Image 1 (spheres, rainbow, N blue to C red):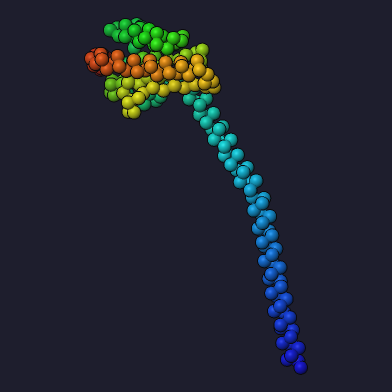
Image 2 (cartoon, rainbow, N blue to C red; image 1 turned 120 degrees about the vertical axis):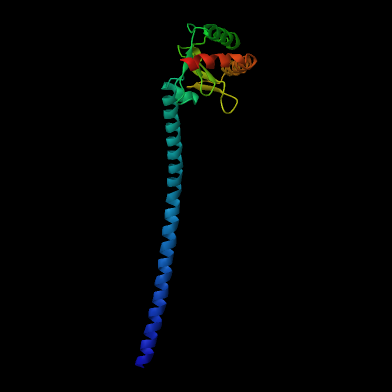
Length: 201
């Protein structure tokens, strides 16, 4: 009789343990469901946070880049190369600067601002870089003759609205680059002359 009671007691304990396991499993499942439901907004918040971080970082980088002088050797990819600055007063090449300025104004049609170091020749790479600004549109542009891509036209703009007029002007900047590079190719000995003069300095 005692063994029967002990056997029944063991059977009850086993059944109770099975019930306890089932209850614990249900509790875990419910807990996981609650955690999953709570995790979805957290994932969405993380995505939004990453988007905001990206936008903030992009805005920071744009503002930092705008503050840089476009004529620095770093911005033209000619680090470590000496600069031969060409302006209206440069002997032998003052007329080159003037003719390029006039061609830009004729092609683009906007008031173009070329600074003191707008035209720079880098003798080691035989690269000519022309930098300028269109103040009315808050656009800076740069033409690079020896750009590795072969298409060395760059623009920087802060908050440029892409109206039809502004889009046409950006297209005109592109046309001005094409004309500028073609003229340099046609006048092939110009860069050689600049190289000779720059090497002597």
